[in-house]
Length: 320
Image 1: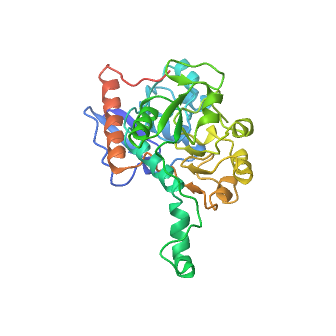
Image 2: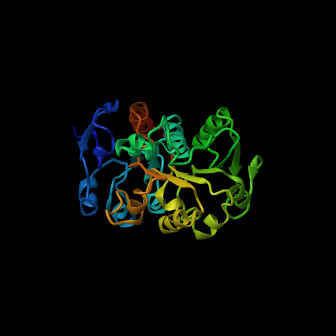
Image 3: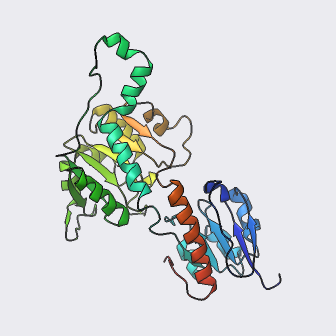
């Protein structure tokens, strides 16, 4: 296999075991690691033509040593784990996955919204604890329940995921507003960021993590949330200042939070987010918003499509 491309997958365990990863349609040698520690990255990608990574970082020092590396195929949409400038300067292409989560993330977003607006987890836990028998009647009203119809949904990010969330919100009778940037700039159809914070009953984040969006929601933003909204984050953990979120929950500046992403992942057992997770008006899920069976298989198929397209000289989904 002297002429075969060497492909190294650094973290196969980030895709579910049932997901089928078909073989690329050109001569190749595929080396698969379930997980890769940071100190092992340089050694494992040495001599590779193509590296597949989902969450293993590829930074400047490692890329400078990766002689012969032609493509980093990211098995995800976000590319913040890649030093894109270093990849570019070393002549390494980067391709990512797009559009695969158009159903799974919006559905997960609304699973969190509906569960929180109707206090489903709190009521379930109270039933198990015997509260229904203690109440002695057909129902009880220990936790708040509110309809979505007639409320306002504020969406940060109007790409494919944010737009899909908006369509679901409209179908449920919500007024949907898309936010402009935090710096005050807006595009047609958007409202200013501060206005969105003030009028939304539910705020959901669907934007990438960049230097500009890190801690997009922090102490100053929580103060602006006049309607004490639910805050939903299925995008990236770094978008929300987690300590500020804890204070906002304590002060009643938000009515609850649905969190699918944290920083780091997994969070330490003694972290702020794990304290938050114990609250009755908070649901924390382990970054599974993207992880329907259908979505992961679509991702895996697109991953191989990207690799095949690049190797045939017709690259697609290039980043940077």
